[in-house]
Length: 398
Image (tube, rainbow, N blue to C red; front, side, top):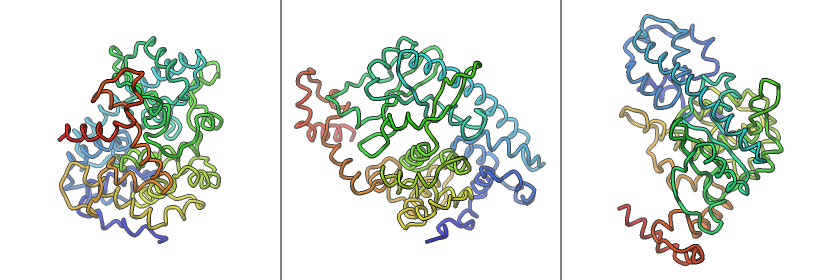
């Protein structure tokens, strides 16, 4: 398949609010605003458009685009609501940016290398302005071996762990991927990552990510204070993250659209996707972005987005997107999976990574001590007891 026929505009005729939202999120929406038929703006459910923008975390883009249209059909109350949210988000992003810089400097001053994921640094990198993207927390990536020391300095900085889960043996280093910390007074949450993604699977080592890092922010004296992922690694991360969540928030897809016009070595990215099992998620991301946002797929990656697997995964994500919006209407295809379900997650993995994932299920998890507390010297027993503990948790949920 060379064309993204699974998502033609007529698919969205029954949902004018979502159609308008997708139009407003396009990178080339501004020069196209003059082509908007004013008649299409009358009769819209503007309250639903607001709910959609809030759900997909794209209020800044929607506010600025509707403000540019400046048409009498757009309710003034809607614009005031969007403007208030836009201003609150700007202040929040500036606070997150300042706090992320403070914690990053603290860790790096103690010899801990830090890469910032998503958040204000990504907003600056992809949008050129922290106010144009939303974030609820700060995500920092460090080397797995620095985790114990980093946790101590996080608590020195006033942060407390959000969960007290015990780490069993060493499986947490590659089965889990982050720990959450909350500052009780600043109300800022920081996720400290030692891996990009949860569960066993292919991803670049921290050393490789650090080697290809980019400067995210600099101090007033010109000294780098925040580093982010290199552009190629950024795509690997964003596509896998969005795919894992079924792209049920369009904000993640807009990130892909904005990254498409950045200076990325797409030729070098293709073998990286093959090496780390990123072809299914990457193909899904490009297929969705091209169909929904009109994203121009880089030439070296068009073959990845044209496969049957990419289209099948894109249809699954489309069902998630439509099923998650605040309205009831028929979805494009029945949702056979749910975002985060084991069947859907396995469909995103290549065969070798599926096997590794299934093997990882046999190893102890941080939740096992909550079911059966054991002294540290007996933690090895969690390995043979794993099936029984899994069944106990399973039935406890029901």
